[in-house]
Amino acid sequence: MEIPTALVICLAAGSALAVLLATLWSRQHRRHRRRELDSRRRAADADAELVDLRQRLTEAARRERVMTEELAHLADARLPALTQSLRHSHVRVPGPVHPELLDDAGRAAFEAVLAAATRAILSERRRVDGAAQAAVRGATTKLQTMCYQMQTSVDEMLHKYDDPDLAEQLSALDYLNEQILRRLQVTRVVCGAGAGLVRTKSPLRALVMGASSRIPSYERVQIIDHLPQPVAVADRAAEPVAIMIAELMANAVHHSHGSLPVEVTLHQAHNGAVVVVNDAGIGMNADEFSRARRLLSGTEQIHLAELGDPPRSGFAAIGELSRQYGVAVSVEPSHYAGVKAVVFIPAELLLPVSDDEPVPAPVFRPAAPPPPRVGDPPPLPQRHNRRVPDPSPGPAAAPADRDPRFRDPEEAAARMGALQRGTARGRAADTGPAAVADMERD
Image 1 (cartoon, helix red, strand yellow):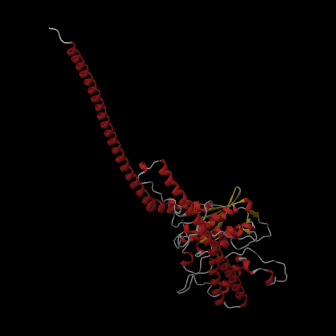
Image 2 (cartoon, rainbow, N blue to C red):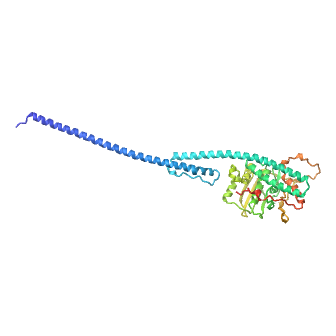
Image 3 (spheres, rainbow, N blue to C red):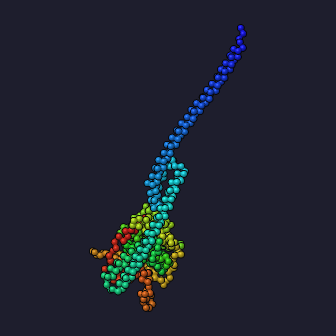
């Protein structure tokens, strides 16, 4: 039986349509599958981005907390410690709380803050300390002038009245005035001023003896001269050297027991002269020696706020004078468990002493005072006279020929000592330990 042509055609057309439909479905399915996969991929990417964003937000919140803690640590600990470290070298500035979480930019920012704070603090300190030193210089200048006026008045009264009791009272007043002048001179030097007194060239032995008359408990000072030839200190450095030696003596006397002597020896060096102040009193530890040497070197800038309350200005003044005049001062432990201070005076500050110039005795030991009676105070210092009267007769110099503000303290002391030795008692009121309450050993 033959199949009709039309049916064959229809069957062929249906098969082609089925194939076409299958092909179209397959393509659509694959396209849908790709879209589904893309959607899933995009969803996964979105989830990953969301997770990363959440992590970044968490990290940002953590860094914000860390920076807040670092800023609080900077304000509460690091800046206050920085302020103290600029005054006390042993104070350490703490580091950051979270150093591992600070990147280079953050660390640089914090260091910049500390550097800016350091500059601001130092600048303000210099301004305030400069103003304070200027005020102190003005006050001490006026007080020093008044003390010189008091010195002149005491001299005039000693020559005007021939009364032993009045003489011993005036001697005690002059002794107290000398100590006040010494403290004023030290304060002036620390504040950037001069000593306020001009001397001619002075034999070193006489200079040391005169320095001992400016301190309390002078009777415990033993001055021994080992110089083979007498030398004098040049006029420009005579008073500064006297100030330095007086401060070292007062320091040694203040920090040693009331019955222990303070030994002061004079030696010749290869290119100068040496004065050694040796005591058997309270020593210093390593930190105190280190601080004392820094102050005595004169290399550090002096700030009044760093000298304590009340200011301990002795070593600071010595360091300033040693820097100005080239005198070297050092301290070390003594053989008596106390402190030995060595003052080296270079040869350029020394002059020979001619034969016709007065020279003190080579060895000076203060005479032991007579046994005290009940109620009697200790004796006044016997300051050595550096000058001797001219043996040739001649008219006395008129008082107007000399400036009373620059009276030679040793000469005046000799006159008072002569009056004192002529009195019945020869002793005056002690100034007490309060006169040196501010002496330092650090």
